[in-house]
Amino acid sequence: MAAQPAENNISKLGVHEGFSGAISITSSGSIGLDDDESERRSSITRRDPKIDHFRGRYPHSLVWTPITVITWFFPIFGHIGIAYTNGKVRDFADAFVVPEDRMTYGRPVKYWVMDTDLALDSDIGWDEAVEIASQEYSERDHDTLCDNSYSMIALALNLMRYKNSASWNMIWVFFYMLIYSKYVNCGGFWRTWGPFTLLVVVANIIALPFLYGNFTKNRYDIRIGNDSSLNFTSRATGRIKIELEMSGP
Image 1 (tube, one colour):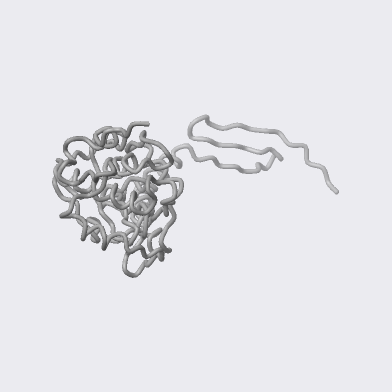
Image 2 (cartoon, rainbow, N blue to C red):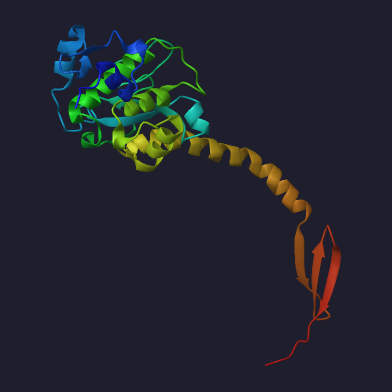
């Protein structure tokens, strides 16, 4: 069988012309990062499989952190990044900005460990996809609604054909992260839900006098009359008298 052109391999990976500066094609037709990135890739792929919360290392994982103000009101919305197999995180922070090992909105509070065996070329394929997606988004403008940190993750997953799929998008990444991620510790849970909880408590404290005032307008009084009747008095409906038959023991 004749060998397929290298260009076909590129298209299968979903790599378009914008990636030409980040990849090279070997004589065997395989695809990898170019020579300028070889040393960088070598350091990236020294895998440390241990999660280190203190150093913020989450090997081959998706990580999530709250966004000030936005997460206060909507706790399920935040900022996401993706880590190399050595645990260092890349995230699409802003227009043309994809920092490494320093998440834009602080340390991760949730993470989802992924299985590199489900990625094309396993560990190396994972790291190359993360690197190429990071380089691509370092040349893109940031759109909060349509092209954001979740979009960069979707591109990386498509490049590595995670779970043999090239149909990842920001919506799928959002819901999968929401379902499968877990908090790093109790502090991470508080950073996510604490401000929202305080806002709800304060809102109820402020609203309670108004709610109580409306309630007292329709207050009910219950009294037993001298004629052995039960009297209900409501400001809304007036007085209702119920005759009771009282019997001794």
